[in-house]
Image (tube, rainbow, N blue to C red):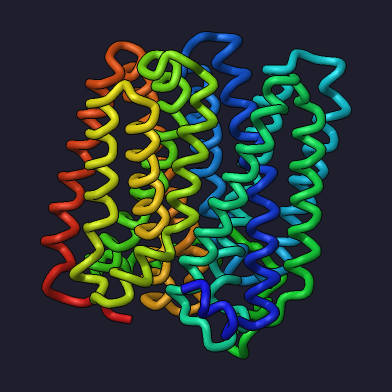
Length: 404
């Protein structure tokens, strides 16, 4: 699939580079905050509490974010969101010397995730609307997932010495720079003719209600489209579970918290190579026939993690989870892009993210407790849940294609 990059446009390259550099900083920040919170509390529950708060905020803000993305220029929204995130991190560096490190990092993480719904809704529309040359949308989504995870992977590699040397401020500065670089890349993107233009300057509650009512009504009429949005959220829930369990698994099973970086890096490496699964398998089959497979192999990977104490075997299973997580996310995102009109894409992205947030709000407290009480039992129950979802997807989509 990498050979297909020669058919990509300049805008596609800019988009992919901006995604890469932004996620490099995110990889550093996420790893450091999970390590700091675990070191201070000795429990995954502290990090789980942060995830619950940010998902609750995300759930509420997505109603507004999707609406705004559909009536305003998504390019402008993305630029504003990245600029604000960079400013928040710079302010965090300034205040870090005057307050408790855990408090500052938690506040920073929550503020960043208040902005995230607007960025994600805008970004969802951008990837489907930019000039991409002869590159297929599924290929672009696969490459996007790859550079997303390669940025995370490099961020993990950089985070290892930063964690060892306790250079939290430097990590925040690097993260801020990545957001400002992403603004630069987004500014120079060029779009196809069907790019959504700004249609209103009024963000009225009545119009917001009307637009969401029309969308939800159409989803309930076409239940397969509703199921598509729901199932498209599951891969992100799996990522949240991984963020929750990694430090506990590295410490309790592999007996060394440093292996957190190995597990996270191997997952990112697998997700970075997701385009191989897309090229070899997913592009050769209809969505209805292959949609369940990515989730199924992730469930197999989690079961495998319960059966080993070897870091080498564990990294192999994390690689499997990563490569199928990235491929599955790309597959479902592409299907969402082609199944809905451009004026609905912002709200569809936000609806999917709201579902992710709601599922995480339910999943995180349950599995935080399970992982603390019995790590392997938590893995098994989570894996069985994913397999049940796979069976449901197979029966929902296998015989009939969704309307495009």
